[in-house]
Amino acid sequence: MFCGRQSKSPYYVTSRDFKEDCVFCHIVQGGNGGKDRILYKNERVAVFEDIRPAAATHLLVVPIHHIANTDSLETHDFELVKEMHEVGEKVLLEHCRPGAKFKFGYHQPPYRSVDHLHLHCFELPHSSLIKNLKYCIPSVWLSCDDLLKRLKNQ
Ligand SMILES: [Zn+2]
Ligand SMILES: [Zn+2]
Image (cartoon, rainbow, N blue to C red):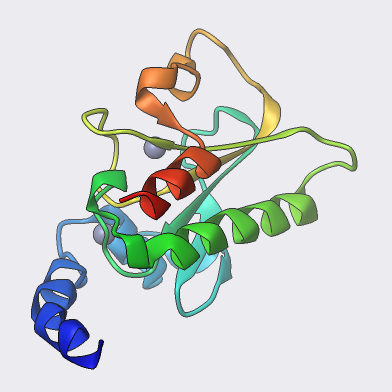
C-alpha cells in the first residue's frame, strides 16, 4: 500500500499544483478578489459566489488543489467529492431562506468554463432557464450522486 502511494506521488503532486494561469487557483489563495469572495475555506475545499449568478444564490465549491475536471478524479477522491457536496449544502443553508430548494452538479467534459473542478450549488429557481440551459442538460451536467457512483466503480 505504502509503496503504491509512493510511486504515484510525483505525478499526483505536480498535476495538482497551483496553476499560475488558473483563476480559481488564485481565488482560493485570496487573489482575484478571493479575499472578499470566499465564504468558507478549510484545508481541502473553498466556497465562493459565482461571478455570474444564475439563481438567487449560486455558489461554487472548489478543491484547494488544482484538479482540472471530473475526468481527472480518481477513486481516492471519493471523500473529497463527498465533502464538496456536504460543504456546499452547509454554506447554502447558511445563506438561503428557510425551506429553499437546492440543486448541485458538475459540468462534464468536453463542456468547459473554468478548467478547475467546481461544484455548482444553486438555490432554485434559476434566474432564467434559457440562459442557464448549460446547468440543466443532462449530457453536460453531472449530479454529485452520479459522480460518486462513477468514482466507486472506476
Ligand atoms: Zn486551478
Ligand atoms: Zn461552471
